[in-house]
Image (cartoon, rainbow, N blue to C red; front, side, top):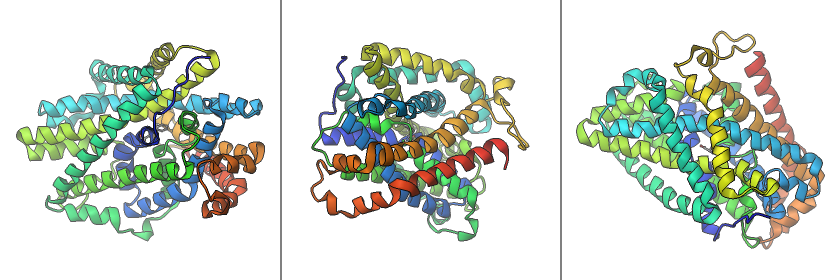
Length: 460
Ligand code: PHE
């Protein structure tokens, strides 16, 4: 058996797990989703999902991981339910697919760091030209993937944990400084109001679905990230407080990202907030403009600071995305960690090439597919987002919870959570788990999965 490794301390585990959760999803995804979803109302629904639905899923994943001491697939075998390991295989596949496009976006952010350093704020007018410059963005993506592979190849404590312990505090300090800066700009308040005061007339089903998808993705759930990380933790740790800390950090950073970006949008738009719903480009187009307004070397410094923190956040997430397939190959096929890390990242990079090309460079991948009843086509990158993030993650989450409640059995889940948590038997959290896990939670997640598939792909 190849050496598996362990986190060296509870803090190390929390840093790595929070590092997985905090990523592009928080700083790039959350603000644009909130912007498109009507602001504070989206935030409210998102918060509800994070705590009410996602938290129990995280706990379940951690318990399965720690009990089995195996990767996302092997965990099911180790618990004696080999037939159910297809859930883990779906997770490994999701991880590979998500990382393939995630790395492309991380590559853009990485490249932007240099653009900002060079004072090239005019990039705002030509985001498409930037993503079409295939050798540049492909090269940045490759460098990013190499960093990820390098960290994963170093192993759990010397690589993943160490990187997270350095990168996470740095990220928080940088974000807080940017907020302070943003809050003093003219019209900052217009942005803050949009972000914090809910307008209930904007609540609709698509807000609910998007908030759900965002919560799942942002917390790294449904693909076995926390089964894998859970397999490296200490038996004595309290899983409930760990999951709570990870969730709070992730949600906290998303809110901080909002507090940083919406005042900036208020400022650029002169208080009208026009362009707030522009979608995935929000960060790549709106922000450089602001850095350009600041101008000169100050603009460069703030711009560089922002995009490098985005890269740091992305890096601890790409590491966890790669770790899921790597742990699988290391445990199940007895490959060395080093070899597995480089091999897997190579494969993932290749799978990501159509996503790279589908942003203006290749017409075929840019207009890859037109779903039933859709008026516009979807590019390859967003097609993978729809398949892996929007569909596979809630499906995986639903299956895992169903498995834990009915196949592995609630009592076993309870027994694992109780280790390291005195008083669990009489706790509120146990009652809540027993309330949601048998039926409500898996059914809700499955319905959300089914509706997303019907609405997105079949135009219902
Ligand atoms: N949670 C990460 C983010 O918000 C993305 C991620 C998803 C990482 C799934 C691991 C697993 O950016």
